[in-house]
Length: 276
Length: 353
Image 1 (cartoon, helix red, strand yellow):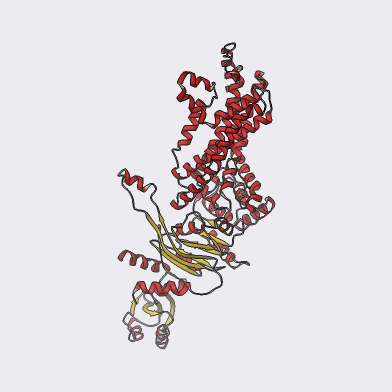
Image 2 (cartoon, helix red, strand yellow):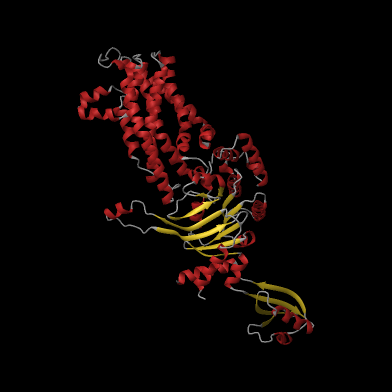
């Protein structure tokens, strides 16, 4: 009960700490904004090559720039959900501060939520920039319910965060060489339809490789968000990817928290909390 | 009585002393660090190391307001023991109870009761200021900002860190980094404080002030219970009410520093520098003593040396004879065994066995 009451203060503690650390590297912030603007501009010119060539089967890709920008913004968010906790644990191990954090009366779920909080805020800002630059400088239009899109974003991020907790468990025990990171990091960009429709995978690489996209939660998240923002679909029309994401969440979240708890106990048994 | 039986007796004797409920109670604690993926390594016929036994059957209690010293060589098990009490490492067997809470089952409660100041410099965020670092940890302890800032001001003043408060941790001197670690350990007013070499990087004056502060913490109301590890044995002797000697993961003795010294050797070597008599006259004070020596220090003085058991009458006897001879005592020195001798003896015993 006490932990729940103190949760907001502890999340705030992590956010304030990470914000201070973030602003201690001011140049990095400006350069990142500039790099997003450069990427959006480059994609705008590439999209001009495809003007008039869009296959009618790929309804979400009539305006490739809109699809790429939603893809990149959302992928950015998904990757944060997936990698934030593991990175944060690894960073605390490298810095040697993990023991100091674990020495405070803070429980595991709080660590999981609080250590990723700043990353999500930061990513929300930078992901928004992709869409904002597209709208303001290149006249990209989005339609449909932003609330529904946000629900998809949240749900997919939670599913990927569950995988992120598994990844953090690997970081806790094995320190480096996390298979989830390799599979999901490289896999999501290729198989989830960030840069091209997933149907192309089936058409060109065969049905077996095409099925890989079906086991990635990011595929359903991206599909749902694009259906809402680009095609303007409502809740009933996007119920299939929504239900699939909910099933992923129900299965993965409790399992990943259980694995993380065991990983911390193992590190405590081996005395390897601050090793990296 | 054999040496090991005497040691066992010494441990038993003090552990049973009743002083109310202990603040820290350690029972049959053992810790063996496992070798990760041992079976897998064996399966692939890779060389497999033996698990490291860091602690074996350690038991003792620390009472409220007591400063309890833990001494031993590097690798003796002091840090492992401290980390188990702090819930950072899980024991293989045995229990640690801190103010009624089990360190494994109620680890969150235990962490509310303790503060740990270790010798690890990397435990802070180097790009944050001293104040920002402390505020972060205060918030994790659940302190409201106003209370946290007030507490931080008190600690900065008490530890003479006011000038360092706005400086980045990475820019602080080693001594200030160490003081900041102590300040962090005191943020939530813990009832139990675990101090790992708290004066290691401090200058002599700062170290003396730190010792005063540690003593005052143990004497305040309510008192803070302190488990203290240090390689500075003189400091341990000055500060600690009781000391445990740990060697190769086992507690070899627990008692007051004075009793531990007497356990190694109850005798002390007395050196008297006297004038007004010559060496021949001084030998009249020998009596039946075998180890009585007289040496000429310079033209005007001689030095008489002999051993005695603590508190016996030999010194009085010798002084009486010298007074009768008309000698003037210029200086008296007593060479007693120290905790270093005690520690050395247990190490030698361990190597021999």
